[in-house]
Length: 360
Ligand code: PHE
Image (cartoon, rainbow, N blue to C red; front, top):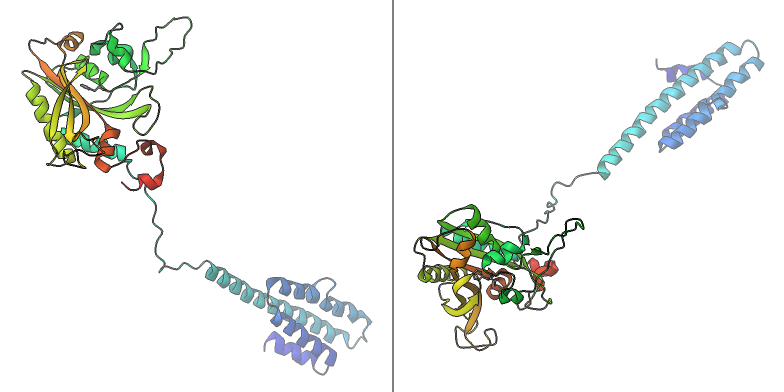
């Protein structure tokens, strides 16, 4: 016989007690949260609760009634606390189920793609230029952006008094030690050519080298100028290198970079560190040589400076100009990217507007 059946037997005809039992059981059953169940527990079984009141009433009953009422109160307490515990575990299980369903994971939803960055257009163009020269057997070397006057000018055949120095307005860097009275001999390199000297100083021919990097000039920023820009330098030093090697190499290069249809031409020019010097032009993409706005009517686009390395430069690195000769060239990466992709304003390379950058 269960406790409840036993209790009902004990209660028998005691109407008030039977009603209390029914009420108490239905109050437990109807609790719909752990909080309301706890309120019912306190109301029934707490120190000031109804069951305690029954216990307290026993002494004032006729002696014959007392043992039965005592057993009723004890059984009642046991039945109610069992019922409350059972109900509590039901409510806990419900709460758990609700929590789980809120946190449900819908495995049929598509995943969220992580946005990856990608190469800046200038980096891609540099990579493309470099990879063409790698296929021609060149190696890559880099030099410092903060450079000594010696490498940037002097060893490139531009001694202090040389008028060509004023061609390039430079950013000089102060060396800060008042004790030492350093000369103004450090600057942000104005071109990548000092890498020629650094490599020739430490290695001997044959040399086939390309060198990408930043260069700095005191230029007003506009559609075609920037105080910082990128160059790729290249040079070769070996026995019997002549102008034909220079032209052949650069013609192969521009056809690989811009397509087989591009023609190249070489115009005489001047650089202190090459003799003879030239500028290379390529036939205009827009008009194929007829003359248009892009090429300003000439049919040609200027693309880089180049020339045969001046024997004076070899003097600075102790190469014997009777044994070795070489050529060098230097190109502006922004200009090449602008021409290749039809970009008319150089500032977009540095503004980092992702609407521009994402197109490449
Ligand atoms: N350094 C030159 C410039 O910045 C380019 C150049 C490089 C010319 C190598 C000749 C040879 O204008």
